[in-house]
Amino acid sequence: MALFLALNNAKFRSCFLWDPLTLSSWKTVSPSKGGPDCCGKVMDFSVCLNSYQRGRLPNSLFFLTHLLLLLQPRAMRSEEIRVVGHEEPILAHVGDEVEFSCHLSPYRDAKHMEILWFRSQASNVVHLYRKQREFYGWQMKQFQNRTQLITDDIAEGSVTLRLHRVVPADEGLYGCRFHSDDFTGEATWELEVAGLGSDPHISIEGFKEGGIQLRCHSSGWYPKPQAQWRDRQGRCLPPETENITEDVQGLFSLETSVVVQEGAHSNVSCSIQNHLLGQKKEFVIHIADVFLPRTSPWKRAFLGTLVGLLLLLAFLMMLVLYFFRKQRKSQEKLKKQVEKDKGKLTVELGKLQVELDWRRAEGQAAFWLGGILHAILLLYNIYDKLAFPVPLTIHICDLPIDVDITFSAYSVAMS
Image (cartoon, rainbow, N blue to C red; front, side):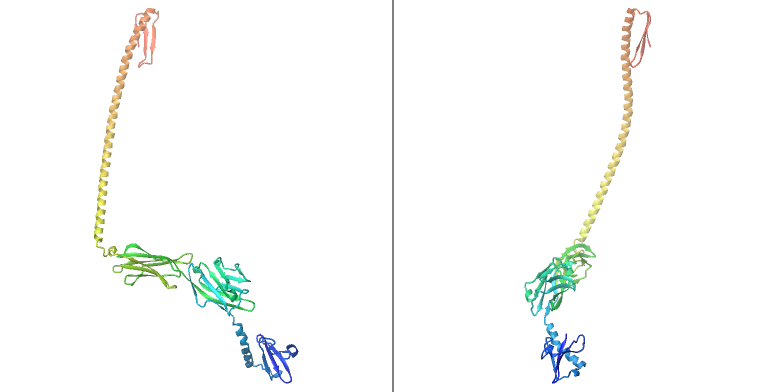
């Protein structure tokens, strides 16, 4: 920024320029170029020094300090326009939408300005408005299809960016920047994300260490939640186990267990709190005395009955096994007797078969012998009537025995 000085005396009148940034030497501007009075012609303001000779211009630090003080009004005017954002951190719920609003102060038309929403630094583009258009090519991947620019009041220098479907990964530092040929300014703020999870659920796991083990589970929290067990008097119960896991969306699930002893069982509550929201969800369960192992009046009777049933079951099993073995032995004995009787019957049957065959053969032999004799008589009568001169032998086969019969003039022989 150059400073214009005018020196005036009775004999000589001229104006000088001095650049405080480069500390360049004084330059003379003639009246013909600057006019009869060159004060206030070069910059928005001017300094006129009268009654100083050109050769007596001071170069001291004191004079430079006064010159810098003279520059202060110009700097103040350049800072009059500023960007106003969110002074406090913004708290958004998981799954909801959040709005980032920025405006110029004092109000100024921003239609032709470049407006940039960024995260952490200007290179991380959340949304870009330039030349009265929206540019999505520079947008970060995680914000694609999730931003909406509202320009209803852009003529007054006010704009709003709406971010849809907030997720835990959106948490961090954000800012907006306004830029034009004669102005650049920005504002930053923090975005905090919180998620209120599901209602806790308590389940009874069973008896353990002389008490009842309870388990509490809930999911969908952000940031990490805090769990607390309490009895009916509001006293804290130390948890037996506590496990917190994170899913792919950055949300946390919590599972915790406690063993409830006698005297602390009537009403047991499991509460899970989000410290960022200052909210909690609670579930209360009532456990009757009869369920506690130490105070159950029927515990011994139940155990005695259970032991009796087990003994009875064992006796019945032994009885069934005894009858089964006895029946198996009887079956084996009967099987052996049957095999023995079968052998005897087979022998007797063989004998009967032999006798039957013999009797059958004997009967057939007698029958055939009678027939043979009858045939011999018939043949002999024929032979005798025909009066054959030589003996005649006839062989009879296909009988139980083969027979040869020889006829002669005075006899019949059979062999």
